[in-house]
Length: 218
Image (cartoon, rainbow, N blue to C red; front, side, top):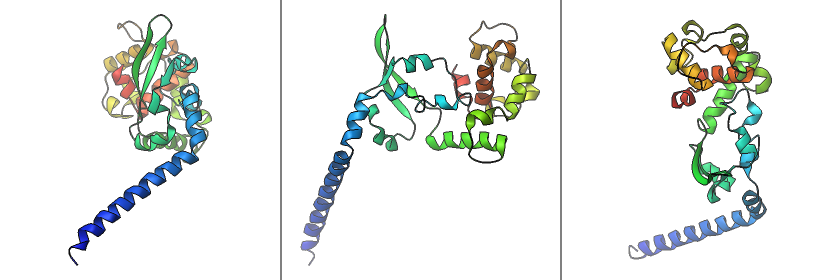
């Protein structure tokens, strides 16, 4: 009886492997149209995919024109959306091209997992409406960010203290530097929020509150 045990286990393993291969083949066959469409379409020109539809509840727009013009495109495997289930960190490899400089490889990364980004959306909605789901574009103008956007000329510690780890105990010098770097101005003096566009101010405040990583990197 013990002699046949390894044989049975081996047969079971081969059967499972065969079923897995057949299952993958069936999935590919059922999604053939989607696969061809994925290779033909540049999803980095899709406003929803790059979350442009959420602005001003987004992390900046300076590269939007490059995306919309098709200057950035996914590399081969990055075009297959069904593989996103394995891409928990939301990291993508792509090609970026400039007419005069040619093409170079770049790495794109969302500022969080899908779950983390969904939690940020829920926090914004709860602050604005008390409900976990809402129209983010409308909700942003019902939060304290809209009030600060209209009333505050200079970002000060008492306004943003405790919003996130970056401003857990901020100094005016730190905030001046954050705003100047965000506005891409010379590193001298206090940069007034009023010198930024309305959407830029909202993006800065929202980023500072929910995910200051891009401000730190900048």
